[in-house]
Image 1 (spheres, rainbow, N blue to C red):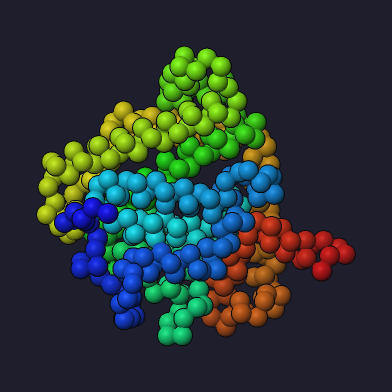
Image 2: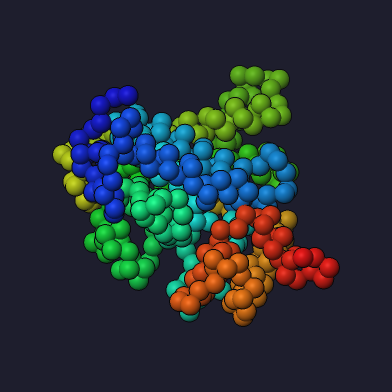
Length: 371
Ligand code: MG
């Protein structure tokens, strides 16, 4: 691995852990964070949570687990090329979706509506709550006791009101400074991963078509190149060859544009890299191409009537569960019953559910003849 750039996060400039621990003997601190995340309960549940498609729809679609692995792969490639901390981006990527509710964004929006008046619900903050508090694995502390830079990377965005309650993690939102370059990379890797895999899953499910994708200029360009280079190519291979070119051009553009920004700004250390505008960036052309992909997916996939039916069902399930438990907390498993902030504990319980567990719990509570 290349030597880290002076503005990379490293063991030497890290703000460390909340509870002091002996340094690991055969790993660095960020490898240790990654390993703790991989062994957590919340990480295993990602296998049965979805972003767009409900999990039982088919075995070939992305889950939050495979999404997180794709994000980690993309983030590591970018970090290594820029001599940034590959272990840290891997840790952040694998943890970035831990706080998601079942049923993707529909679930998060529904739970946020339920929690209005009780502090709301935000998946970034829930991810932080999981790694700081909810995981029960260690004798001496709650949560996973991750390094500041991993925790900072997990909180991609948050309201100023919430930022005020996050202590050191919230400061950058109040001071308007940037997170580490590694954290910025993970945000881009997340977008590159989901835009591309949602196109792939959208095609596979038949909800979007190759014809419609002619509106996405990157897709149309690579598909046309491929058709002229391989006139007989079709089906899955044509789609995969197109998508891998899109991922590649986005990753290469991000690396090239960021290298230009770094050469221009010349941050001498991590502290300087946090000032001013974000240094990790696409060129104008690829930023627009990425926006175009997003607009396309919103219009043709996320608003597709079949997806909206699932979204509506998901909202109903989350609403029903929340209302039932808040109305009578005695129906909750004992560890979620609380003398303190009961709505927050209901939200913890619901957010921790996988898609199929939420459906099962809903049947247990509402279906006559189910227990
Ligand atoms: Mg994500």
